[in-house]
Image 1 (spheres, protein in one colour):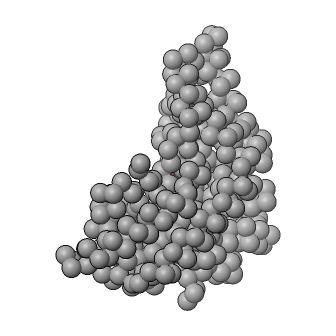
Image 2 (cartoon, rainbow, N blue to C red; image 1 turned 90 degrees about the horizontal axis):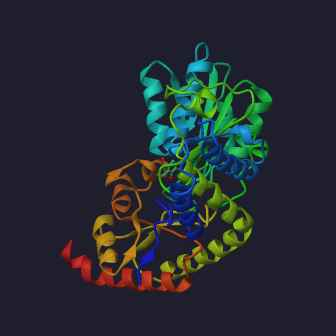
Length: 378
Ligand code: PLP
């Protein structure tokens, strides 16, 4: 049986999610903007999904806007805020380890004349809230930082930063990419003091192709997609009702088990770390304080892709630890000062509720076997 350990890349849709999506496609196929009963039926389904997400994030349903995924959510958040709040103030504070969807968007604003301060982790590979807080000044209009970094699983001090910045500079817009945290940790907009939060369905056993942006009441965003008046005229285009319904269902299923799953993941992470500690030539790239859902390590002397395909031949699916898109290094491991020789050999293992300690044992044995058979073939 295949062992799927690449849940930070995407998760298997839950059975209930698949049923919900199928029912929507076959029975509730109306356009939610249509005025007749079949359209209304679709709208009601979307309303329920919106309520589920709003309840999870702890605010009103009209703060939730559906998008095609977190990439679009973060584009809308950053570009949209840039258009509305970045006319006079031109400075952005962000972390040096953001996902490409945030990084590239901020890079492109920089090319247009914005100035950007990128915060790096300290010598221990951890982020300090003060580094972000001290970087904010009178000219800052946006702070964008992720909650859980997706390659090594480090947790960024979003709450401490956002609270302090809101106190000192109440006008600064606070955006958080919560993709690897939502439904894994409690993510509450008001506790975080976030104005904008990006979320994705396919990381929480929903379907690919839908996500959401939390937009605090009163925050203005200039649309990046123009057209019809869907999603409060902020995001044009007929909503993908089936995928949104599936997203709502995934949240409904996952919400009650956040704590329980978290405890289970802690056990899995602990077990895997202790198995790896007993093996030779393994370096752990994750932090003990990081999310329990992700473990990143390097197998000395064996390039990530080689090990990845060796494990694949045994039906064990992991990710190369420093590749955000198809083999191209993202620079995240570099930000933690992990040398290239180790970054080139990094493997990311990410868990779901279905992962067992037995799976991890098979993984550890396979890596050991790989070390014996691959090292000579370098
Ligand atoms: N942000 C983070 C931290 C991610 O891990 C990902 C997916 O890999 C994204 C954003 C992009 O999400 P989506 O695939 O929904 O566009």
